[in-house]
Amino acid sequence: RFTDGMTNKLVACYVEEDMQDCVLVRVYGERTELLVDRENEVRSFQLLQEHGCAPKLYCTFQNGLCYEYMPGMALGPEHIGEPQLFRLIALEMAKIHAIHANGTLPKPTLWHKMYDYLTLVKNEINPSLSADVPKVEVLERELAWLKEHLSQLDSPVVFCHNDLLCKNIIYDSTKGHVRFIDYEYADYNYQAYDIGNHFNEFAGVNEVDYCRYPSRETQLQWLSYYLQAQKGMAVTPREVEKLYVQVNKFALASHFFWALWALIQNQYSTIDFDFLRYAVIRFNQYFKVKPQVSALEMPK
Image 1 (tube, one colour):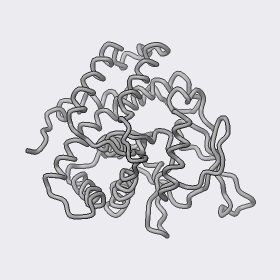
Image 2 (cartoon, helix red, strand yellow):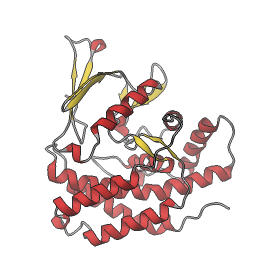
Image 3 (cartoon, one colour):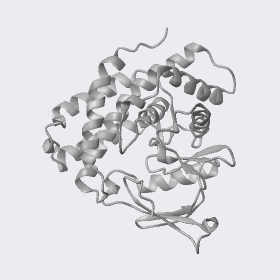
Image 4 (cartoon, one colour):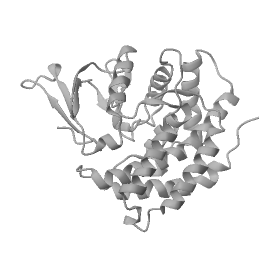
C-alpha cells in the first residue's frame, strides 16, 4: 500500500517479491467524483499513453483503475530543484503540452472547475469552519478578479497535467528520464497555469515551506529549457521573461484552486491529512504574494 496519495488509495499487487510483474490498483477516495471527472481522467490516460507519456491502462472498474507500474523514484521537494532533474521535468512538460486533440482546442478547464468548486463550498460546506478561511463573498470577489486579470495574459491553451506535485513525477535513473503519473486533473488548460502550479509544488505538501519556491534565476533556466524544447530552437530573453510573468501570475490561481479543493476534501475525505490546515496555508500564500505578483508587468 502506498501512503502518499491525498485523494485515493493505491495498492501495488505482485507475486512473491518480484516487482517485475507488479500492477497498480487505485481505488477512488470518498466523494471524489465531486472533484474529479472520472470519464475525462480515463480519456486523458489513454491520450497520454498513445503519446508515450503514460503507463499502460489495463482496466477500469466502477470505483477505480488498474494500470502498469512504472519503475523509478517518486521525487520530493529536495529533488525537483536540482538542475539536471528540473531540465528533464521541463522537457517532459513541453512534450505533454504539444499533444493536441483532433486539431480543435477546447476551452481551458480552469474557470469552470473553480466556479464548480466554489459553488460546492457555498452550498455544501461551511467555510466559516475556521476564522482563517476567507468568507464566501471574499472568495467570489477574488475569483472574479483572477478571471479578469489572468484571461488578459494570452497564455496558450494546451493539454496540461494540472497536478504536478513532486510525488507525481517518477525519475528512472537507468533510462535517464522522468514520467508524470496520476491524470485525475489532466485536461486542456493555460500553459502558464500548469507551470505555475508545478512551481508552487516546490514547497511540498506535508511540510509546506514557500521558502523553497524557485528563485527567479531557477525559473528562468527552467523556462528556457521548456521553451527550447517546445520550439526546437533557441529562444530570446524576452520570450522567457514573458512566460515568467505569466507563470507567476497563474501560480496565484493554483493557490486558490487547491485551497477550494482542500475545503471540499476536508468535508468528505477519509484520508488522514489535515485538509483544513492545508486550505488555510494556500489561502494565506495567495493573499501574501498577490500584491507583488499583480505588480509584475509583461515585457514590451
